[in-house]
Image (tube, rainbow, N blue to C red; front, side, top):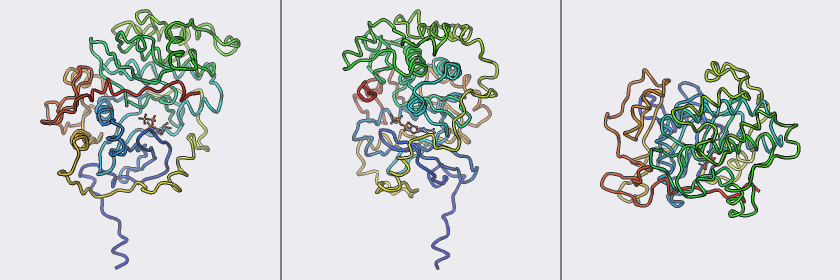
Length: 424
Ligand SMILES: Nc1ncnc2c1ncn2[C@@H]1O[C@H](COP(=O)(O)OP(=O)(O)OP(=O)(O)O)[C@@H](O)[C@H]1O
């Protein structure tokens, strides 16, 4: 009898992806609604990062729209310098994102330990991140939360953009929602006169300054102070700036931190801004031809013998977690489900990168995705040809679910504003 009860439940790998398909390994991070841990696919043995979000917490914090939007946008994206989605699924308690695993830690972690980074290292990240930003803008997505915390290194030291929690589609119509982490917000967001994807280049400029000099270009004791400084204060350099950064490097920072989006580096239309950046003397040492194939040896290789993350997450999970993550069969009772829970149930759909073709949930973007995401070619789509129930925050449409519509859940408006305080 004992032998029978201990036999592991057979896993149906031909069926829909679920937590049963993975071995749960160590915890590496904690987000606002859930945790991140390393997992191994039981069949392929590939390692991934599993980000899981507690559904009840998500409803309580009115973040359902953001989580569904993040899931949908991530399906559109496939790029060497983005933390790509590989699988998505849910159980009764959590929504799960299975993402490319980044064992090199985030740039906030490295910045805090090192104080600042060498100019050449930052230059390498700028090349990789600008390629990612340009890709996103090409397919009509602005990230809105570019900051060192959201830049993750793989074990070889390549930079990847992550956290699409407040990313959004953009079109000709400018957005107005104040979104992002205040210290990295472009002046046009704070001015509330409408903004577009140019804001991501500004945030990149703030990151470059902070990574090289170990402090941010605009600071403030209060939000209004910070708003004033971002909007009006002339860009100042630290006293030892010339020891840490070359003249061309400073010119790139200055160009990215131009308050006029029409003059800002990276912003010229039709990819011309990105091409200009690539041609800039500061970036002439970058071999752009082999950058995206990751053939180059990154100038900073994270220490593989040390954990490049805060080890307290692991301890917390072991000692304090009273409901540790475990694969469970679903017991769903649709009748007693709240409206928000039902939206999550229906709209946080399963995704399996081995079986499905990436696609856009936004009709105007479908053509762009099929041409831009080259790596997904050759896979059969198991999706209906017509788009699913639409969620278009850029058009001011709330999340619609069959006959139900959750008003006021436009993800452009349900934004996350991180104030300067959190960084002091
Ligand atoms: N793909 C990944 N590989 C390795 N570690 C990761 C990965 N994604 C996230 N992490 C780690 O987990 C931490 C939390 O990530 P997560 O995106 O959940 O949190 P967050 O940035 O606070 O996002 P949110 O604001 O959506 O809660 C990150 O700081 C990072 O250290």
